[in-house]
Length: 110
Image (cartoon, rainbow, N blue to C red; front, side, top):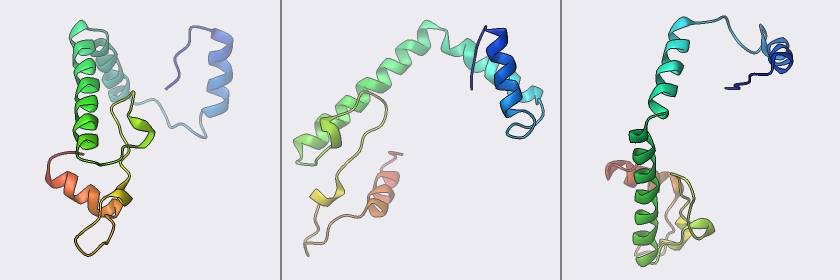
């Protein structure tokens, strides 16, 4: 999504993406965006987002304390990358990304 108050930029963007890259206007999409922007402007949403970042740091700390390598030594967002090659089974087989995703999904971590 691109938001601007510059009329000239708006015309250039519209010309570049409509109608080829973008479909027609759908009012339900406008309503959803307006609702999301309204919610995102609240102090409660800011607190919620901060808690998500705190939770990310907590899981990184716990993974690292168990010897699991986290790429880039951490994260500054809600996502993190784990080096699955550092996790080996009893037979020496490294954990695949696909299997790690399934294990985390079973644990309720998406």
